[in-house]
Image (cartoon, rainbow, N blue to C red; front, side, top):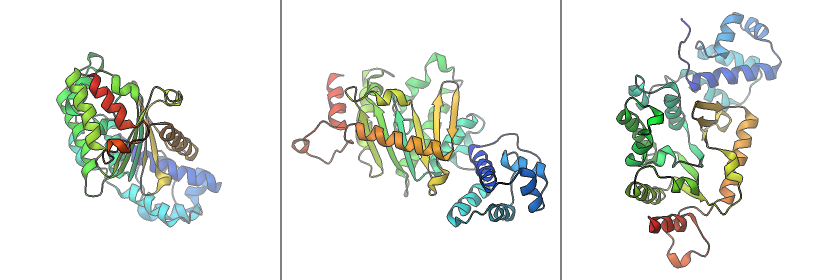
Length: 293
């Protein structure tokens, strides 16, 4: 079997986990490979996600490393046996690996926690708002409509029969950013209110009047699958995205999101009557901004 030329984040993560288990068990790559009758080069290629691993071999490695967490092992097997195919497969010719990894991460998550300081999260963007972003000359997109279709298809996960729980903390600055004219901004703000009606969506606004904590955190998304140990934090930047997988990193970003949510305004809750609102909340802030448009 030839070596992979393109490696997905899921494949990379499986290799990382197997290498981490080996190092925790105190084996060198050569020692571990010899113990299960595998070449050292092949094990190295598995750990760097350049090649696949048979399910039987994966179980052998887990037993050798003393991994007794059956739920975790089953999750590793699922990662190994996954084809990586989904709705995003139809976009492979037009979207880069980062976008495809994002779609696969979203599809495999049971919980998504995201913080955005300057943009409305992609899962919440209206078509006109997203088009206004994609139309920026500095992005130099060859096919804006194709990029837009990809983003709109991503949003389907919000209304699946068994959708992920999505919790977003959005800085107030993002609500003031003008992507498109006033009508586009108004439609986007109203769309946030409508999305908050979904039982699996929680939206909080981090106001200018709160601590400067949000300004120090940057944007990130934490994708948590059924086995939380295999969660991934995605950091997006102009020059590309970066995925974090180390246990300490996941713990740090989980704490960071908890801190952001604690300091943010109460979530949008359209079920409360106006007279029941005893404190400022996210809905009140959005309604105030709508009034000023």
